[in-house]
Length: 480
Image 1 (cartoon, rainbow, N blue to C red):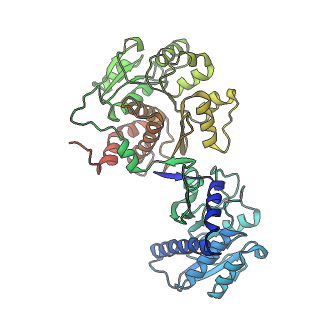
Image 2 (image 1 turned 135 degrees about the vertical axis):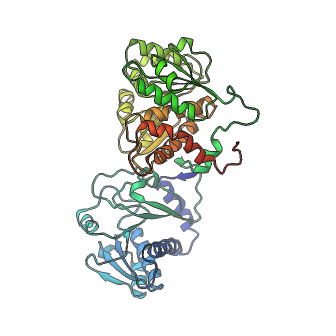
Image 3 (image 1 turned 120 degrees about the horizontal axis):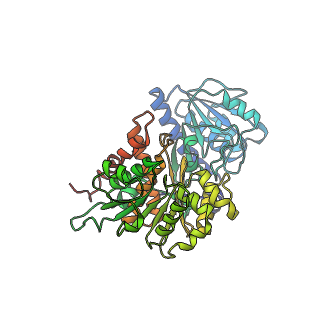
C-alpha cells in the first residue's frame, strides 16, 4: 500500500531534514535520482546513453535546481545536455553554476533532444502553464521526464485548468503527492527517490495488487456458501433488465458464497445464472449478509419502498444509480436506515451532485475533499467513480484507485462494479476496503475484457473471474 501526502505536509517534513543536512545535499540527492531515471529512459529509448541529447526546461526555484544538477550529472556520462532557462534571472544559482561547470549548454529556444526534463514549476505553483512556457511545451516532441510533477497540474488535486505537461514518467522526492494518483495519466510512470522524510498517516492511500489479493475472500476448507457470504441484489426492471443481469452476474463471479436476486427481472436473471436464487420481491428474498440496491430499478414509489426495506434490513448495503437518485429525492429514506448497518454509495459525478449539493457540498477540483465531506455528512462510505476513483469512509479514511485506461467508460460498467462491491460486503470486508478492492478489480476486469479495444459491460462482467484469478494466482491461500 502506498500513501500520498499533501504538498504542505511534504514541505514540513523536508524542513526537518534540511535543518540537519548540509546545504545543498538534499537537492543533490534528489538530482542524482532524477539523473539515474533519465539515463534509464535514454537507454530504453535509444539503446545507449553516451552521445544522447537531453533538453532541460528550467523554471525558477528548486525544481529548476533539481533539473540543472541532474543535467550536470548527465554530462559526466557523456550526455549532451542543453538548458532552456524560462526565468533566467531567477534560475537556481548553484545548480546553474554546476551545470555550466560540467559543460552544459544554455540555449534560448527548443533544440532537438532524445529526452526533455520538465523542471518548469514545483510544488508551490498553482494553475496552468504561463503562455511562454506553454508555447515551449507545445513544440516538444520527445518524451518528457517531469521533476516532482508535470508542470501545470495542481499538486494536491490533480486538476488541470489550461495548458499543462503530459509526462512519459515522473520522478518525485520524499513521498508521493496526490497528483501522482489523481492525475496519473499526466504523470506517466512515477518513480520515488527516498529522502529520509518522516511521514506518517498519509492523506490517502492507494491499494496495490498485493493488498487486494490479501484482502480478497477466497474460500477455505471449512467454508460453505453461508460463511463465504450471501449477497442480495435488487436491481433492474422491465425497462432495464440488463442492469439486474450485470449486477447479479458480477456478484456471482466475485466469489460470493450465494447470490439472491429480488426484482422484476427475475426471469432474465434465472435464465442467465441458474445458480442464483431468484424471487420477485425483497420481502421474499430470504437471509442475506449484504444488499446491492439501485441499478436500473427506477425511481417510482415501488422502487422507493424497496429501498426503504433494504435499508431497514440491518446488513451492509451498496446503493448505486437509481438508488442514489431516490436518496436524493427522498431524504427521509435515511430514517429507515438501521444505524448499525453500513451504507456504501457508488455515485458518478452527476449522482454525487444530486445528493451532495443540497447539503452544501460541491464537487470541485478537490475530489478527495468532496468525497470525504459527503461521507462524514451522511455517516456512510462514498465511492466516487471517475478516472481516479475515490473511496472515502465516514471516519476520514480515503483510498484512491487510478484507472489505467478508459475502457470502463461504457454503459452498464457501474452495474458490474456494484455487484463486486456487494459480494465483498457480504464476505465481511470493511466498507472502505471493499470499495477500494472492488474498484481495483473492476479496472483489471476492464483491461482483460478490452484486450486493447473497447469492450461492453457484459464482457467486463464476464472477465471478473479471470481478473480474480490473475489477482490471486501467486497468493498462497489459493485453492484448487
